[in-house]
Image (cartoon, rainbow over all chains, first blue to last red; front, side, top):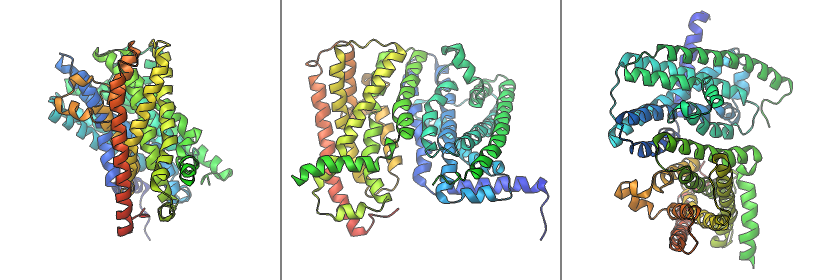
Length: 263
Length: 261
């Protein structure tokens, strides 16, 4: 039996596991439908409020921000319960005991969820264009696509950290649900950060989605998004590293105390 | 006598057993913290767009959040029975259906009322919205009617849960529809005509309007017709729900789909 080079094995594992997770998520058409429709309800409310403004740019601002809401929802609500789902399916122990580092097995899971967010993002922009006549003019398409993709990866790192942090919390899905609104608010998706007190804006600045939506808006407006995107990527990397370290420590503790299954 | 017992005791037992959200680890984040953040989101949105007052969004969102406990609460009593494999046993029992299902609605109604009042009181404190002391008893009554009305819609939702596996998805979508159509964040007169027509037959629309009027200083007599409409809509949905429960129960027996997971 031939052993694959680690250089090839890791990317192969990430891609195959990501694809399997996408297929698992796609088994429920209802869930997939909700993933797209749920942020649309809030986006529609926001569009109905913002359309009173005489400035057409406000609607573009709202549309781009609202499009990121689905990405955050996909991460916050579903990543928090990702390990609960594995536990319920009886596969958590198998994942933990496999020779692949546990942190590496989580990245494709949260990555698949973030990919669903991409689907929701497209749906929100399309909804805004079709129903509210919000122009979809992107000044720098290449930069825009780069911003969207890197944003998704960075946000999935937040999901990675969330999923690890709440591995021993039996009702993690409730925590994920409660993070949805604060994320939408704090990351400046629909409301400018300048409206918040300094300490709140300070919290916003350590969240990758804040910089992600800023980079996306800058690329759409024809401004340079690279500084915002760089900060978003750096924060995403930091979240990923912290989550990897945390996952090893939390797992070691859970195994020592036999609390992994929480039964 | 057995119907009264089934209504009160059976309803409370099934609610406590099947509405798993009563755990503080779920109740506090999902039913106490989340509505506050929904209020804060839309208050700030209104401020950014310079549309509406803080009070407008506070009242609208606090009352609308009744939909979460009321829709999920009743649907969970069906989905929970299925999950624990007791749905078939319940429906095979000779228990009268009206007290059986209405009994489950009563704790849900009370829970929705608590959630709305919590959102309103904490939201008003956080945002500094002045709600006159004399308005609170009227708001409590309006929230009660709103919770009853939304529980009526929840009965219909629960009936569908007899045939649809994904009850939480269904409840979430209904919640979203109420968010857009009931004048929660957009005044009804600013909605397109077709949306305003639909909103007039949905639960919560009239209660939200009544609560806003009361917070602005109106007395109960002024909002009496709104409350009557809200109660009527809730009753119609409740009757529709009970009829649908009966019909779908028969269908489920015929197609052997009761315990399909």
